[in-house]
Amino acid sequence: MTKTIIIIAIVLIAAFLLLTSRNKKGESPLTKTKPEKISKPTTQINNDKLIIVKTVKLDLLKQAIKSFCKSYNQESFIALPRLTILNDIYIVTFPYDIDFERFCYFVNYMKYPIDINLKEYKPDIVAWCTTKSQDIWMTDEIANKQVMLYIPDSDKEYDNVYLTTQDNIGFKMGFALGKAHKKLDQPILLYRNPEFKLNEIPSNEIIDFE
Image (cartoon, rainbow, N blue to C red; front, top):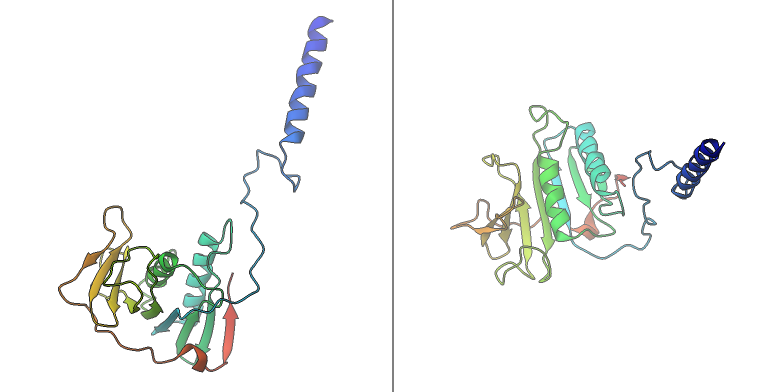
C-alpha cells in the first residue's frame, strides 16, 4: 500500500512539473521552439545603406535574401531588407536600418548564399554606406566616411568583405577569429558613387522581406 502511494505521488509530481514548465503557447519543454520575436518595427530609420545587384536570376536572389532573414531574424528583427526590381538591376535597401556588422554579413551572404548552386548564381554585388565611429572594425581611416563594400571574384576564403573608403583607402574585413581587418596596399576597386541615390530610386516592383 505504501509503495502504491509513493508511486502515485511521484507520478503526480512529475505531471505537475511538466505542466508548469510549458511555455506560454502551451508547448511541451520537450518540443524545441524558437524564441518569441519582438514586434516588427514600424518607424523607418534614416540611413544610406544601399546594395546594387546585377547578373543574377531574381528567383535565386530572393531565395538568398529569405535565407538570410530566416537565419538572423530569430529573437528579433535584425534584418528587414527591401528589394526594388528595376528590370535586370536589383536594389536592396534597409528602411529600418541594420547595423554595419550585419550589413557586411548580408553583402557576403548575397555573394555566397547557403543551399544555392554557385555555378548558377554569380552575382555582381556592390554596396555603399556611411560608417560610424562605434561600428565594428572602425579605425580613424574608416570611421565617419562613405565606403564601398564588395567581394572580388578572386576571393576564395568566402568569409570576407572588401572595403574602399571615399578617399580610396582599401581594407579586407575578415569574419574569422583573429582576422578583424587588414589594410591593403591599394584597394581592389577604387571608390565610385552608386548609380542610384536612395531618394531617386524609381518606385517599381518592391518586395519587403522579414
